[in-house]
Length: 109
Length: 113
Image 1: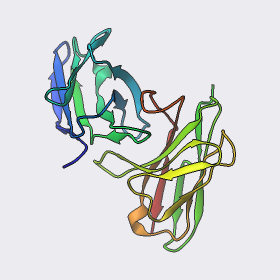
Image 2 (image 1 turned 135 degrees about the horizontal axis):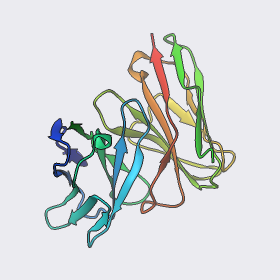
Image 3 (image 1 turned 180 degrees about the vertical axis):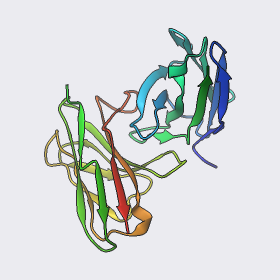
Image 4 (image 1 turned 45 degrees about the vertical axis):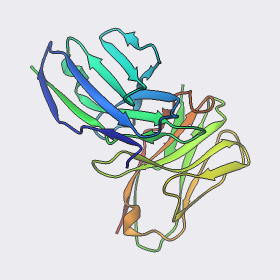
């Protein structure tokens, strides 16, 4: 079983829509979780960390469900500039990070 | 702020050649990482380092070597290039251990022909 699994999409949504991505992880002892954004042919950039109680940053909301071992990312009022691939990242323990394959989002005018 | 700098940005190698991918960071981070990303795939950890003089293997270390003689630099060495090593290579650094986010360089696109 993969450490981290994501639906690759693609998700094609109109501007202003709300879209949500899920990511499941296999190691129940995982402690740290992140969402990164990666534009085409660019490096990953941190979007937000995911905290146990859930957290929000503007139009972006991240949630953690330890019982079901998944994290989610909700984007409200989608903008054209939100078009990118969103990577789920999990740190099971120690110093290694596991990346999901990414979910592709295209926001359509 | 330079952050994490990788060189070269692009390189084409012949099978069996060797090369070193350079990575340097100016944030005084102790932790540094090398990843490879194949098309449509997630990043796979090759090697990482928790400080100068300390390195350890990641998920996919075969065919690669690293060294960490200074806090700033973490070069990745390919000794005998193979077509399977065609990929995009990313270097990253972080302030501390697993609960700290990573900062990435802009990548090295490597083709082995």
